[in-house]
Amino acid sequence: MSIENQIEEYISGQTIQKREDLLNLHKIILEIIPSCKLWFFDGRNSDGKVIANPNIGYGSQNLKYADGSSREFYQLGISANTTGISIYIIGIEDKNYLVKTYGDIIGKATVTGYCIKFKTLNNINLDVLREILKFGLNNSN
Image (cartoon, rainbow, N blue to C red):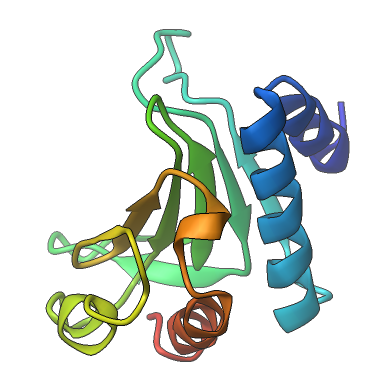
């Protein structure tokens, strides 16, 4: 199954509100980075055990690890969770930047060093979200 089909199947399997929010986020991200590499992670490890929520990924970067190894990975990710949606900004060096810069202006969301969690898109400022997404794409490894 193609990545696009996996993404479509994942989104269509969500509740109505999450499905609408994920579709809108998908559209927003593709407007910002239209020809990006798409990723889909089903949340399972190599043994088939569920270890995380499924993620849709966008863009590409080379992540470097402390042991000197590296691997290709996405720059932005979105995922439905039990309480709403999470957006991941992968590869930001300053883990305090998102909280300090956007924590008070994003709206009703929890902001950490690389993640923004919210119940629905209606709870957050979409202009601020677009700014965060652009920042993440321009400042990942």
